[in-house]
Image 1: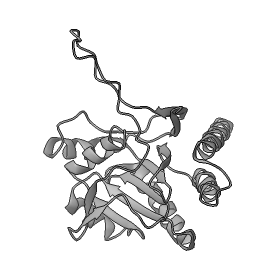
Image 2: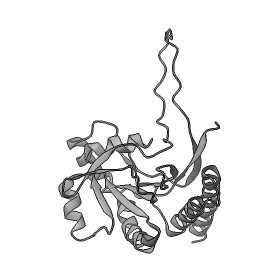
Image 3: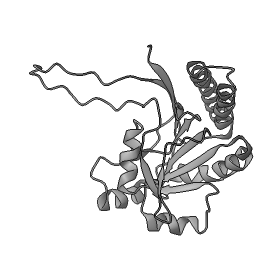
Length: 239
């Protein structure tokens, strides 16, 4: 079967997250530092299996970049009360997994939009899950003044592992859209905007209704996000 494309759209982000991340990295993480998303560069990453090296291979091969999986990983994270919550679901509802941190400015800017999306699409069964790659106490303090109207999970060091299982380095924010069958439909890297969310969710409705297939939905999303990125860049230049 031909590899399925997954949409990755890189969006602009500010550099104010650096200090907060350094504290988080020094106390918890050993891997290289996380970054906020770089400037807009649309790209498509195929879902491909990892090749098996011959048993008699004598030359070392460089590590391969992680691949976006075809389905939501079978993992769990704890909510603010410490209860484990599975990421995969059999309830048939679409999901939006948003990876964020309190020290990430574009992540913070997304919260009002995500709150609005959860309210607007609740009747469709959309379930938004915020995954904070951050300290639990920092998240709890931040949410006292900036509440999330959707499920909030905290990863700390586990959040990095979950991001990698989704085929992503710790490049925040990023959002993963999955359908009711746990199939990953799109991955949006960088700050999510209203028009982008609308385009993705519209295709997911068509997919759920059987009016398109997965590859068709992914192709339509890729084209829509590309056009929106071009339009947003032109508006920025015009200013």
